[in-house]
Image (cartoon, rainbow, N blue to C red; front, side):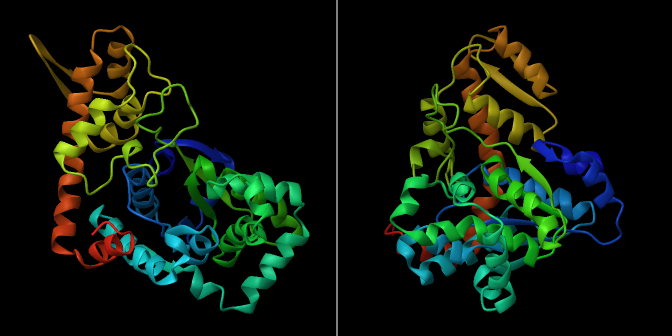
Length: 336
């Protein structure tokens, strides 16, 4: 099961510690999400990894970080909207076939004095400079905390979440690395369990171009494919996406093929105009063909759009049957 837990990850800190955890009869994992808007394609990687952890015997918790979203000024700081988004996120994971997971709201934990004692203990072991460096977990610049000191609580609370939930494994994207490393650094001083950190890749923005650090973002609709997008919207966004011929690094279309399509399908068939179709049985085969310029970007884009639509079709169907939280969230977002 180690291969299942580690597949499609960018980083494991550390593999030796993960092997020790895997040998335990009872083991816990968690991942946290800010309820802050609509779910995009990048979340599929997290959903797939949550399913892998459950299959490997982990008692897995999804933390709905409502207080964190409030601190981060998401959804206008409206806690009712944030809570609605939390319920929508539950729907989204159900739509992505995540079963057997436990959901916890941060607001449930902050009512416990022990939680805040943890936050303060972590704060006493953390310099201001270290807290500033961890601001990237919020998608914020360190300077923003100078005007709103609550932002400094965010990384401290994320570390407290890990300890309070008593998890063996913390899962997140590479943008969560600073918080996970802070937890690993301070755990011994606090007498807490050292968490193994599992980090997923981050899918680049569809409009990334040369900006390797740009990622899909719910706040920039043109940069992301959302799980509610229909085929026409998917195709339109993919057609406009950055996809330089023969280049794979920083190419969001190739990243989608690698980290999403080939996780859900054993092969990928690419239809071509005025040429026989090409069938790839692995991402490596696809990459080799693309680098050699045997595969044109437009043909690749058309195929990626079709496969993404096949993945998202049952998700859209789920929301047609369970629209309440989604529609309420759209109202809060002013999109309905």
